[in-house]
Image (tube, rainbow, N blue to C red; front, side):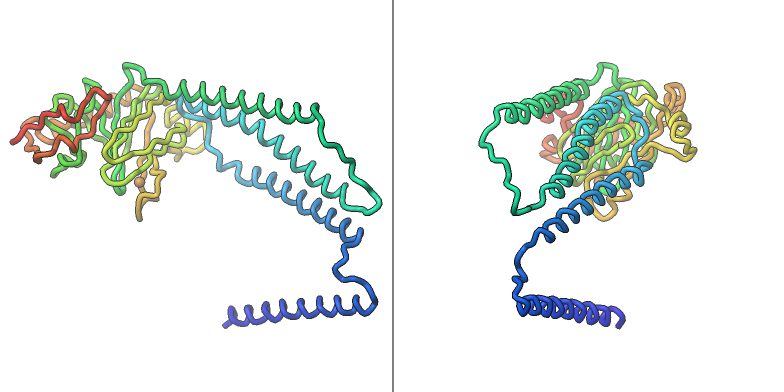
Length: 358
Ligand SMILES: [Cu+2]
């Protein structure tokens, strides 16, 4: 009822305002004045209003910077993240001062040069000097940013080191599973048609590389200062592995392997001190809206010393121990080979997979 009354009152208010303006217009006409004529006084008022609104807008922008500065991520916990942060900072150091300079000029000019009939604008058709300035300056600045950006990209996307630890991140609605490549540092091949019973990742247990693979759920542990080469897979829809503290995001696409490698440089313990937050944890999130429980698709990442990491990993069963190794019954269908994702590198041809029939 209150809502309805509010609507009625507001509607009546608007009608009333319309009528008052109409009376104002008519009384002006009676006095012989043109109600629609724009006077110098109107222009000055509009100029002042632009100034007021513009400065208010800039004040709001500055306020937002302060208000949300605590939402910023802490220092990057990966080697390449420091480079991307630097790239972003340099871009912002160019963009933010430019934003303020251009907006202040825009606001000031709108106020200073409001229309007055007695003043004529200077007219000139061409100025080589001006044209040169507004062509050369942006060209140099943008080219520098682009070249800097490409060289950073090339460094980050260069192939992983030979000894990088290989870890699979397996996405499905709505959780993550990690698979460590084990002693041989090679992941066993897998495909969705091989998913059966406890073999939820569809690992081909006839593949020798699969035997020593180790699966991690709930928590993903990583050794500090050691490069990790991630292979991303998805069972169902497109997910996106997002590790904000490591400045990493990669899509997980059904039927193909995507990859990214990075080196964590700060342990969870050190980051807790750095952020002054004893509860701090690195996190892996899904950053593609993939369904109803998308928001809850996350996994804690723990970065620790190599010793602690090895101890943790040793406590895990290998896939051969978990699933029974090569003796496990693999439900290979006639076209099972087509369902196998090519892993590790392009040389792993899906056709070459020799699925053993039970
Ligand atoms: Cu998802």
